[in-house]
Image (cartoon, rainbow, N blue to C red; front, side, top):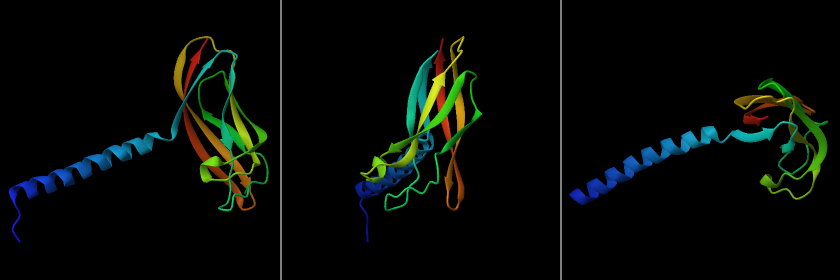
Length: 141
């Protein structure tokens, strides 16, 4: 089988594009877990819903999730409030027991930009499940 020069160039371009595209997608995937939030002194905001479910949309939790600040700027308070949440990302339509994650800025005296590391613990029948979350926090006085 004999290949024409145009075919060789096209095949080489396709292989090169495949390698370059794969590298870009992997880099974006790594950054997808980091979220951004901007707070002014005295503000409280709902950051997200917390839930842990099975494939049939049933809650696996035995109580309200807990959050712990592993690292972060002073003056930021994080708490979980019990709530009924709808895990729409997994095509579930009914509300289940879960929690809402809230962040509040208190006693912020100067502008800062830092990364906060949170550890979220879900209590299940099979023991505790822990997950980490990185949050880029920008604070304003």
